[in-house]
Image (cartoon, rainbow, N blue to C red; front, side):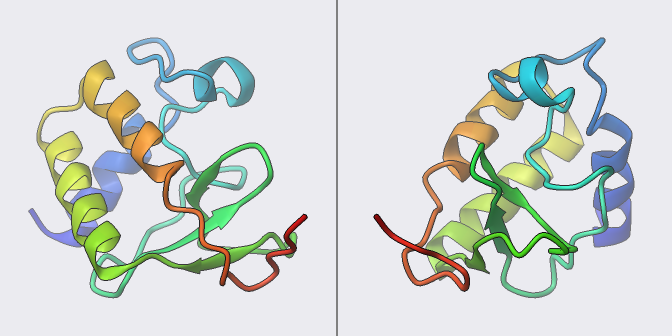
Length: 118
């Protein structure tokens, strides 16, 4: 599956709350994929993944117009994110989407740009 096909599939399911339910994301943000913004923006899966923290969840943030903390994930996190995303694209399920959301919440980084501790 190409990255373009992956992004198309992710865009297709990103707000499909009739089929999927990812807590607390679905209840609070009407999304099933953790992305920050009004709509899914294509992610450059050829590069190391950059995530953002909007204060409510960690997710993809391809356009940081709000100045939220953001940063690259580690090599290990990058590999796991891409593995899980491919698996979701091949066959999306609630279990996979919830596991992915939960994993992304562990990817915060104290060295992210804009991070203010304490």
